Length: 176
Image 1 (cartoon, rainbow, N blue to C red):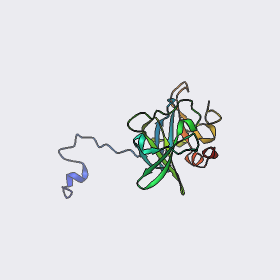
Image 2 (cartoon, one colour):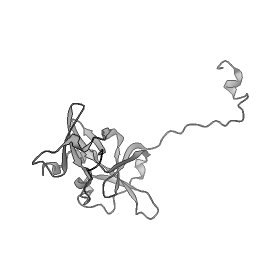
Image 3 (tube, helix red, strand yellow):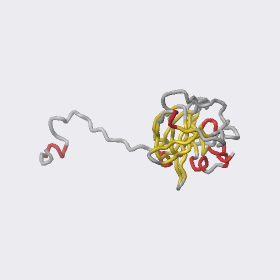
Image 4 (cartoon, rainbow, N blue to C red):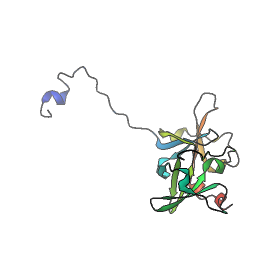
């Protein structure tokens, strides 16, 4: 078939079919997800180790730990602290743990790893980092952990906020 001259020149019986070129994605790959309040956030895929959905009884509560932490999870022999991301960011809505599985995003930076429990995972998307704007209407509790936001509608009421996983991991809030 490759030796056929019609194949190389595009002449032949499939001449009417249009050649469709694959587009390369623009931007950077991000994971989009929601916290219990309904706010949508994104994390760069490069900072995510894994997305897991353990049963709530696999997360072991730890006494005298920060109230932001749901407990620890033994995942493939590694102990991961799991936090309620919505509560960490200052949302008033508490994560519903009375369900079969809890979506947990394991983020990492150097030697540190943390599981962020969220309400639901949306999808992976290629997002143009050049379009990120300064956050608007971000609470004081959330602002230190935002890199910016994408405005999703014409009016500016819907936005997708980009989180800084390193700032979350290194936060002094975990000691509280």
